[in-house]
Amino acid sequence: MADELGQPPALTTLSLAERAPSSHALEQKVTPFDVSGGVDETGKLLPVDYNKLIQQFGATPISPALLERFENVTSKKPHRFLRRGIVFSHRDLEKILDRHEKGQPFYLYTGRGPSSGSLHVGHSIPFEFTKYDESTKFALPSRMLNVT
Image 1 (tube, rainbow, N blue to C red):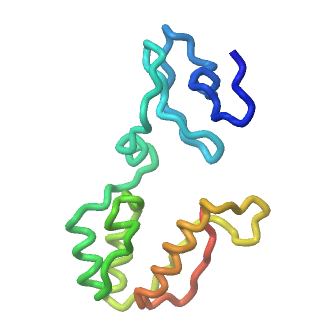
Image 2 (cartoon, rainbow, N blue to C red):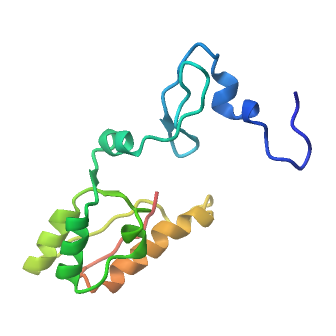
């Protein structure tokens, strides 16, 4: 059945649901262009498994103890994205805090060029978070803003 004009797509027309025979499961897929938690053997759409993503990308979950350390080291309350779990994992935040405590320089690289032709409102989250990082008074000799 075709979707009605002006209405959200029916569940059966979603990309993974179209490709998933009811007897075959599909793994979750997370790319810059497609996000899906996958499909189980019965054809049911599954939520994204964030713990699997953390493991897959070699990240570490952000713990309450790390947030407390961040506040102690920077003398600033962690950003609301950290406190609310929007930013839920990291790579090397402990090393950054170690260097900051020792007065050693470090760079933060975020992966997306602001002059990109494909910027959209979703990029405002990493841009805002990077702006916050700058306001924590980290002693950064240079900042490369480039968000993925």
